[in-house]
Amino acid sequence: MSITFPIFFGLMFGDIGHGLLLIVSILGLYAKKNVDLGGIGNYIIEGAPLLLVCSVFSIFCGFLYGEFFGLQYVVQNGIIMVLEKALMLFR
Image 1 (cartoon, rainbow, N blue to C red):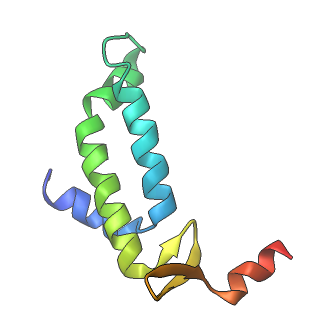
Image 2 (cartoon, one colour):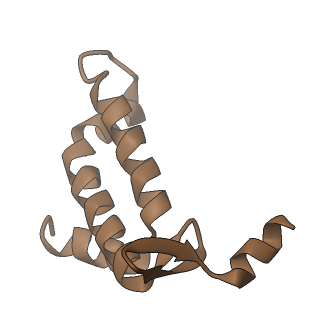
Image 3 (cartoon, helix red, strand yellow):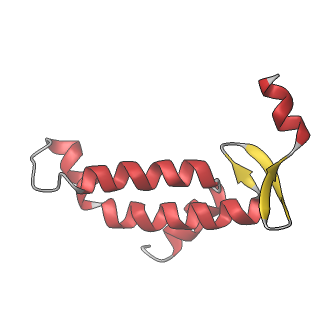
């Protein structure tokens, strides 16, 4: 399970931005591993290494899918460019 679960997680949750947020939140929780957070908090901290691997696969698949926080992107001349449709959301 510890081999296939991160792969399928990355395939289903393939997004660079969400994967980065997951890494930051897991590292923040893992920094508190010596603090007693209660029942579910301790289980999450114990599963932090698995969640960290899941977030790495999520970022990898996000590059394959071209997704950053749900917005499509393309790479032109080594620079990640957001498509025009995505920019229309901010106008």
